[in-house]
Length: 94
Image (cartoon, rainbow, N blue to C red; front, side):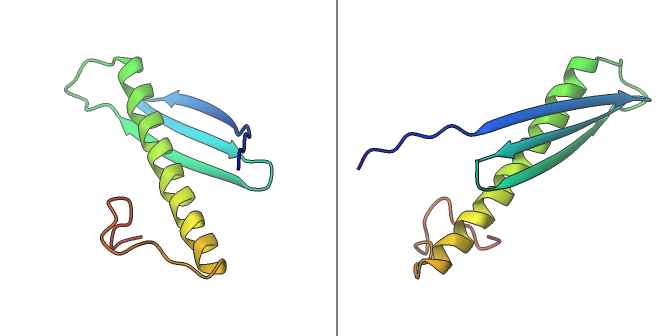
């Protein structure tokens, strides 16, 4: 069975007072999820906005990934199946 779909994402970055916040939005067509991440520049470090952008974006995407994994596990349960114990992508915290 062949299947092709497109999911749309938007990443927004906001910087103020040496703090960068990121919001990443995912729209699958049936579900919308939003991940959040923050990066703070140490006062002793040089302010390099690109580093804050990268860290905040990575954290927002990690948050989104965790939400997506929880959703997949919930959908698996609804379908009458569970993640295989010991699978590398199925951690005890999931």
